[in-house]
Image 1 (cartoon, rainbow, N blue to C red):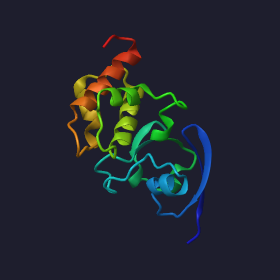
Image 2: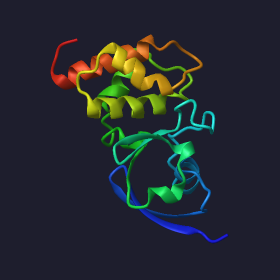
Image 3: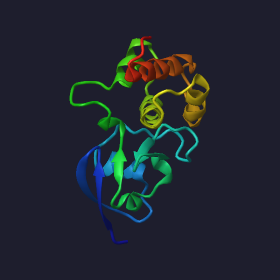
Length: 160
């Protein structure tokens, strides 16, 4: 089978890769590009561990073909921090212990950032609804929700 040449932008960097027609974006990110922060939890789009953004839209990388990335802007967990400076969501997840094993954490962070990019003032219900596609097997969701709500307030300039 011949490989497809794909030109895209990942985390702000122009990127080119070759992939098989049926290769998922998750496999491309992890196996071809070495971006292993995006995790495979279920492989069927049910857990959200492989959440990425494609042109600003939240997508499960396990449900997208790598060839579909042509010409798109892709965002992964590796693009959240600015060099050594963690994104406020990453800092708050650490401060509030909103993670345990770490498999689901990248997906939650990418999804939460996508929400806050769209809505700087979400209600708790909106945060819970937005993150409903992300599953965690290790911890409750309260610390995760609190972290997102705190960062939303911080980004708006409100006090916690």
